[in-house]
Length: 111
Image 1 (cartoon, rainbow, N blue to C red):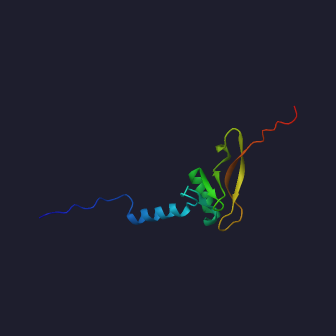
Image 2 (cartoon, rainbow, N blue to C red):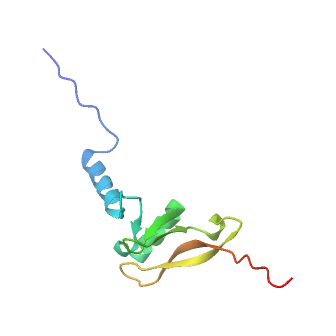
Image 3 (cartoon, helix red, strand yellow):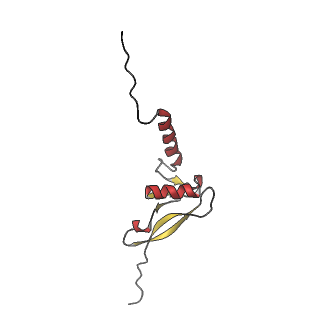
């Protein structure tokens, strides 16, 4: 009696992999899918959770406008300061999602 080998079991079923891939590709926008997340496709709570989970995310406000948003203002460089990042989402026009880094004013004033 000849036995045929069973197909190896995978950690994630093919259908689950396909869904995960579709979700990843669905959030990328722009040329070459540069990993930008379109804020307008998320609810406010979901977008806040994404930034909190990832630590930072590149968020697209449109096809041409995007910025990096961080979970906390401590992610900014020494010559930068954290500013609240409010982004348009599917359900909230100005949702607080984290912090953007802005260049500090280098003008030290009169000497």
